[in-house]
Amino acid sequence: MSERVLICGNEAMGEAAVMAGVDAYFGYPITPQNEFTAYMAKRMPEEGRIFLQTESELAAINMVYGASATGKRAMTSSSSPGISLMQEGISYLAGAELPAVVVNVMRGGPGLGNIAPSQGDYFQATRGGGHGDYRTIAIGPSTVQELIDYMQLAFELADEYRTPVTILADGILGQMMEPVTFRKRKPRKLPPKDWALTGAEGRGQNIVRSLWLKEGALENHNYKLQEKYKKIEKNEVICEQYAVDDAEIVLVAYGVAARMVKAAVIKARKHGIKAGWIRPVTLWPFPTEQISKAAEDFKIFLTVEMSLGQMVDDVKLAVEGKCPVLFYGRPGGGIPGPEQILEKIKQLSITPKATAIKS
Amino acid sequence: MKTVFQRTPTLKNCKTHYCPGCGHGIAHRLVAEAIDELDIRGKTIGIAPVGCAVLAYDYLDVDMVEVAHGRAPAVATGMKRTNPDKIIFSYQGDGDLAAIGTAEIIHAAHRGEHITVIFINNAVFGMTGGQMAPTTIVGQKTATTPKGRNITTEGHPLKVSELIASLPGAVFVERVSVSNPAQIRKAKKAIKHAFELQLNKTAGLAFVEVLSPCPTYWRMSPVKAMEWIEDEMTKVFPLGRLKDVE
Ligand code: SF4
Image (cartoon, rainbow over all chains, first blue to last red; front, side, top):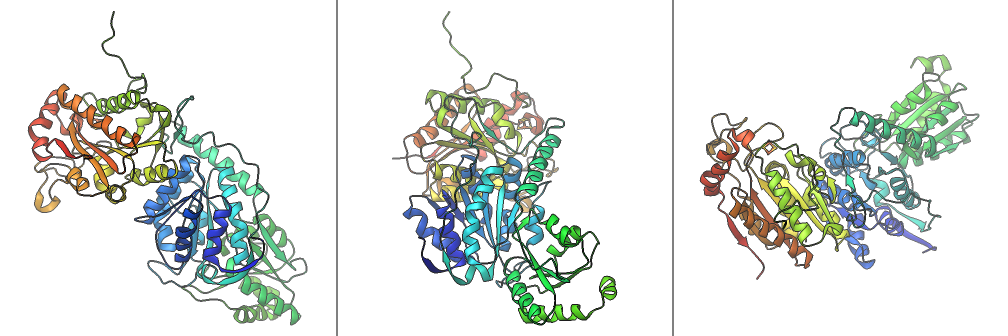
């Protein structure tokens, strides 16, 4: 499939997962990701692979856990409230070091919220979300093409580092149709899954576990996880930048919000305002270094999110007080449009620097 | 000299952490014997619960996974669907299966997953300190029913086997006990049969409930605990085969 096709984000992710060799999909209906589940219901049996509609999101993530423990590529998809239910399983996956891909097509919250697009689950996706000292890789694509392109990577990162990987989309990305090309990247070289439970024929017993009772054992297990996370932070950051070098105002945004930001920045440049943008593609690992470097010369940072400010914390941690970090966002299904963002940029461009620092 | 009894190889040669007189040791042995007699160690994957048997993988020498409290039937589903030729079993207690994991076991049975479930019913939460389980019998004193289980506030004991047997997806349901040698032999037969059905690709879930003593939290001697199963528990949870193929 190398020709251009028109497809919605949810279905595109489904086909990309099939291309990436997913062996099993387990999911429970929830809006706005239902096209994904329906696509897999049709597509997986065609490939002789496993599709199962589960009794709950708890069951879905634990079925993923089971399939993954046997060395299979397994995934689930859901939306915010469902992902909250899966946090127990994600913590166990992290603790037991099992690969998995979890797609979150975010909707408005908290609680049942609404079914409108949102970026309110950034904290949950990048901080671990469940109990314990762990991180999960989180990828935030901003186009339907990227939903496809990063799916294979998600499975490869999961397998390489034996960790759950979240793809953080939102209701707009899941629902909107865009012309795309399905292309397969050269696969990464991955370590063998010699830890997998396959029946102990001709070898000693394999155990997949997250319980470490002996004194010091859990502390050591956590250090081992930490080492892995350090390696991920060093090697796996993906980030895009535009016109940052000479920029006086740098906007930081991810996912769909980054598309609004791009449009606003291009308009701002036409107005003679020196604006640029940084777009984290991996939300964890976060492009701390890239943002820190950009903050070496004085700039005003403006983080734009479809929430009331979550990623902005990471931007502040990266900037380390060297420059002012401001925020603009809308929660609960509100979309910060290019015109509104441009307005903010214009205001900042006439603000004297000293005032900006104080604000 | 003729060997009349020996440890079955799938049961590891080690001390367990179980209390004296606990039924888990017997149930483990029966599972291990069934696996060895059917010669399926090389293709069996076991699932340990959260509860006293969480370390079952330290005693059973098969590939094993430890999972979140109550989720074993979902994990088993993920394993069996992607590995139809493997033998998948879960080993779960009454807190795990009958309290927090009711949705998972009901739906695994309802879908007719081709798995084997060994359900240890000792009418109490063991690992957390002897609290009431859904299977605690009326009047039984526990850490959280200090005056004894009262049906007006805590409800009746949950009869899981009867519940599972009512689902078309379950093909074999039997309640056994490990309270005396004759019962242990019956328990062994049932457990072996539950594995055999899976081995023979009989469509559906095979479920064995094992009434098992917890002398520690019943506050009884091991001998008294065995008697209590026969005198009290079996009145509420009658032994026998509730359902089988054909
Ligand atoms: S607490 Fe009860 S069930 Fe747990 S090991 Fe002791 S006797 Fe066995």
